[in-house]
Length: 194
Image (cartoon, rainbow, N blue to C red; front, side):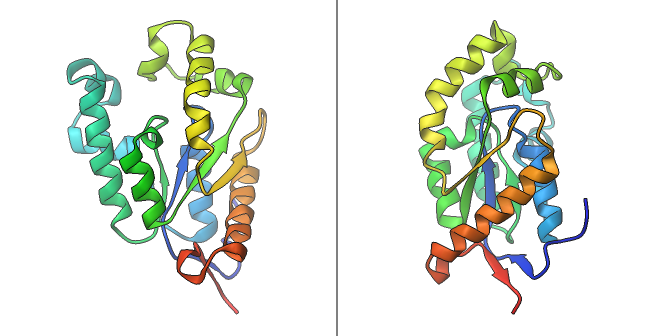
């Protein structure tokens, strides 16, 4: 990726939210590079804290234990210096997590269509929720349940089929700038150099 965004520095954390396969980790890393900001992937942080992979956590401790650990890890990361955070697909469904993200900074929903999600998630077998049946039907059900909640994010950006992560990251940065033009000073995400 070419250099950082001229004059833009992250003032507050941003958390990328959306369904598995929308590009949160890939786009998040590129957005962080544009902003010369730290990037963290909540799933990787959870695995490190638990000493297990996410499929192992689901299998041995269950989804409720995973979700509890996920809330704690996200809260810890949001309490630190400004960063770009990729969350797990279900993290934003917890009201406590939504409130924590909004209080600390903002959520950026990477919105993707069903075909895009099916294509992208077919490449990885480490998605516990998709291993329980027909991935297309499971994703369709998750879209119906989660998209209305994701729509509450402060910012939404399309993550199109065949789209490049660099382009989606650039669109996210542009959306952050648009957000800041309308936001009160205290809620602005970026500090722009004069």
